[in-house]
Amino acid sequence: MASPLVVRPAAYRQFTAPKGVFCLVTDEALAGDLVVEEPRGHDGVLVVAARPGDTLQDLLTTRIPEAADVLVVRPGAFVTSPGPEAVGARRIAVMPCGSTPVEPGHLRYFLSVLERTDPEAQTARADRFFAGLERAESLRIVDGAQGTTCAFGLDDPELEINLQAGVLAPGEQQIAPSGEISVLPMAITGFDADRRLALDGELTLRGWPIVHAGYDRALDEAQDALFRQLLPLHRHPVVLTVTAGAVTACRPGTGHPAAAAAAKALQTLLDTDERYRPVWELGFGIHTEMDTVPANCGLNEVYGATNGVVHLGLGLTPFTRFALTFLCPGSAVVDGAGEVLLGATAASRRLRRTNRPGCGCH
Image 1 (cartoon, rainbow, N blue to C red):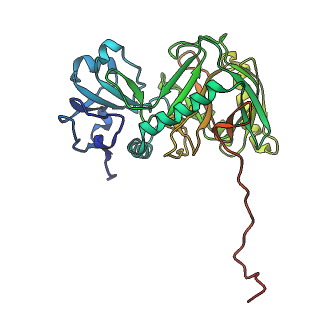
Image 2 (image 1 turned 180 degrees about the horizontal axis):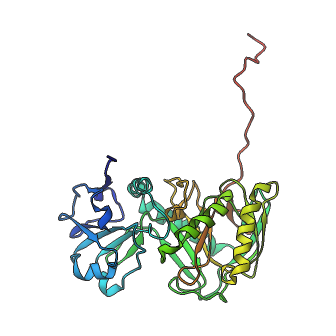
């Protein structure tokens, strides 16, 4: 029998100065596989085993005390944010694991990442990044290996910039593990394919793709098929041409013919549904104490390598059939002076070394 998944409330630094009980909300099917360690500071532990049709809003109003810190781990459901009246003064962290397939091993790993999450360090990193953005006269996303560059602007007053990091305050909700900054052309709850981010140039995709399909389990087979078509991106880059915030072309990265299949799959999707053309999200993962898991896993989205990672979002469920997230760990955000504000830094010099006896003194 596999070892249980362990939830350790005392290790989760988002919940400083614990209030009330620690409440774990999970699926009925998973409840027996989870063990909650005794917390420190909380008044006790409550495990709420949710049925398939239960929403977080319903559970907050019927089964969860008003004085509670809440962790939601429901791989069998797409969890939507409850309204502020239902949340009250509770602090809620939600592991976003309903829109992509999540295996027990993934949950085990990301529960350990949650323990390593330092909310104060993430806040400091985000503050430095925002300060750099605010003082920059111009901004670009560059990929040194592919030689691509894309100018972007943040002057639109209707932009929504969302920070998913830091210590939770009463009444706040946050993803778990935290560590993401997202820039969208409007509120995250809506979608308008005519809205655009200020992006012009070329962007290089290179890393594990994420294909979200969280509202309809009938899409599982098609979701897996699209992920496999895009899988070459893990090793081989695809370059997007972006004009006024919309993708107008995609091609295999220079010197990477093995990326042709992924570029073709993405081009087919763009041609089939124009709503995938806007770059709907410009995101920045800032969790630097984790690795990606080698799968179609939405929890990879906060991956920050050592200095932050750029990612892009195309489409938004349920407005589009799928929502696609592309990690770009080889890219960096640079200001007009060429200073790296986030992302990949210049490659260090690597010298060729051997262990053969080539010394003339032997």
